[in-house]
Each structure stands twice: as structure tokens, then as C-alpha cells.
Length: 174
Image (cartoon, rainbow, N blue to C red; front, side):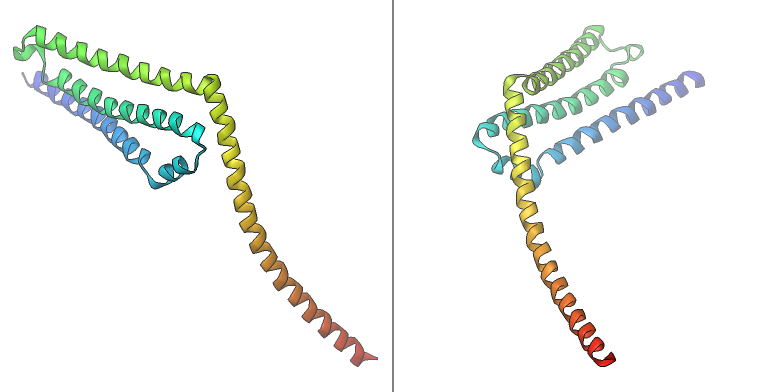
């Protein structure tokens, strides 16, 4: 009896930790997807890219939410629907069928994301993304040039002061 109780406790702990970690990862992904940086990139992207990016973002959010639901349902199926506790076997089969269906939907979402990446549209989006990266790099380079020109001006002034000091020192030696 004690062995059975410790096995049940161990099953609850292990499945709870695994499912809890999965839920935490899903929530973290959902929170990371909606950040201001992502919204800014979406707003600054060319019009041809926006719709594809929105679809991909939506699919990924649905996938993350689905991962959370799979973890919660999996935990329930492992622990609450234990056949030894007298639960109707048809209910247990139905819950496991729902878990399997959610996993199939998750695979379909992942394949749709992969298809978008590999198709011509995905390649065109990658080219446009590269253009966006180049434009941002150019913008940052222009900011860097402005800072560099200010540094060069300061360095030029310091060099001029040193030259004046050197000229003044050479004149005194003669």
C-alpha cells in the first residue's frame, strides 16, 4: 500500500513538473511575442511583408496557446483520469483523443509556418527582410558617421592644439 502511494506521489510530482515547465515555456513565448520591438518591426516592415508576418505571428501565438492546453490536458489525463480510480474508460479515451488531436493541430501549424518560410513568398519575405536590415544598418551607420564626425572634429582640435604646442616648443629651442 505504501509502495503504491509513493508511486502515485512520484507520478504526480514528475508529471506536474514536466507539465508546469511546459506551461511556463508557453506563457513565456506568448509574452515575448507581443513586445513593443515586434510591433515596431511590423509597423516598419514593407507592406508586402506585413500580412505574412501577421499570419506567422498569429500561428505562433495559437501554437503557444495550444502547447499550454496540451500540457494541462496531458496532466489531467495522467493524474485525474487514472483507470484505478474508477473513471469511465470512455472518458479517458476521449481525453487522450483530444490530446492527440491538439498535437496534430500543433504539427499542422508548424508545417504551415515551415511552408511559408520555404515557399517563394517566404523567400521574397526573406529578401525584403534583408532589405529592411540593410536600411536599418544604413540608418545606424549614418548615426555612427555623425558621432564619428563629432569625434573627428574633437580629435582635429586636439591635434591642432598639440601642433601649436610643438611649434611653440620648437621655436623656443632655437
